[in-house]
Image 1 (cartoon, one colour):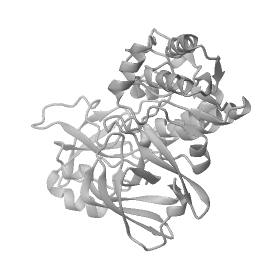
Image 2 (image 1 turned 180 degrees about the horizontal axis):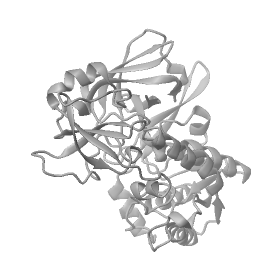
Image 3 (image 1 turned 180 degrees about the vertical axis):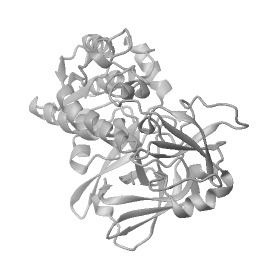
Amino acid sequence: MKTVVVGLSGGVDSSVAAYILKNKGYNVIGLFMRNWNDESVIIDEDCPWIEDSNDALQVAEILEIPFQVIDFSKEYKERIVDYMFKEYQNGRTPNPDILCNREIKFDLFLKKAIELGADFVATGHYCRKEEITIDGNKIQRLLAGKDATKDQSYFLCQVNQYQLSKSLFPIGDMQKSEVRKLAKEIGLNTAEKKDSQGLCFIGKVKLPTFLQQFLKPKTGKVVEINAENSMYLKENISNKFEGFSYSSSIGKVVGDHNGAHYYTIGQRKGLNIGGFPLPLFIIGTNVKENIIYVGQGEDHPGLYRDGLTVSKENIHWVREDLKIDFDNPTDYNSRIRYRQKLTPCTITINEFGLKVSFQESQRGITPGQFISWYKNDELIGSGVIN
């Protein structure tokens, strides 16, 4: 009998994943990961990890499987939280969910599971995998989940072949509605529990609240950029706006902010500046000068870019056998954020890294975030956006 350790998060998806695996004859062990223990940043009166841990324990009792809690909080701080704050301080916007999967769930958690004698680990991700053989070599394919509205393959864009070979995704072929229905039928306590909307490591606490407790406020200017200068913007500055000196002919100061490191490209909420015909959107930040650049309206040309680049060291191939050669433009479908519709692009590799050219300009491309590229429904590779 094969043993699988399931990452029970206290949510409905991982609960049903554990049930399915037990029903298939696996020896299932439930493991809850405690990833944060600094109570000073838990603003909500509830303690998220305790509530989730209790829900996971009840699931294990209902399914009659062994259960334990493991504390990864030290590693989380070192690998994710510290990295995240460093990125924000540098005017970049990291994705903690992708980092969580790369550094914790499919690294530390996987290693712990193997120590416990597991053959596989399993999670409640809405994605699929398929093993194929090419020239005698086993290859793992990471595929999109069947529920297009819940597909989470993007969040796993940094995993590697070994990690995939040891992973199972039991609900990848199901719709979310089917998962909840099954959970209700078998009497799981998590059947109607809402999906978590907070950070992956502190549950209910929202990102702005968390950031403000670690990154000190610093008053700076908000500069509106005229839409008429969009060509100037695209030709002379990047979205980081480093070294750009604004003038009255290009933009004007329209207010103050409390720290450029709190904001990200495409953001609308949080500026608290009114009196304009159209809503203001952030089109660039300069953390060195502590300036935020904004434009009126969601169609402001400063929000759009025709392409992006990824540094050589930040390119990751899930399918290493499908790496493309230098100066060999290759067509893919790409995604720069979760739940975004896949969009056609052309990728070229050179000595400096990777260049992505989109068929249609993309809104809100953000340095520090991840781009992933696909062939049909298979995720081929990913990278950190410059």
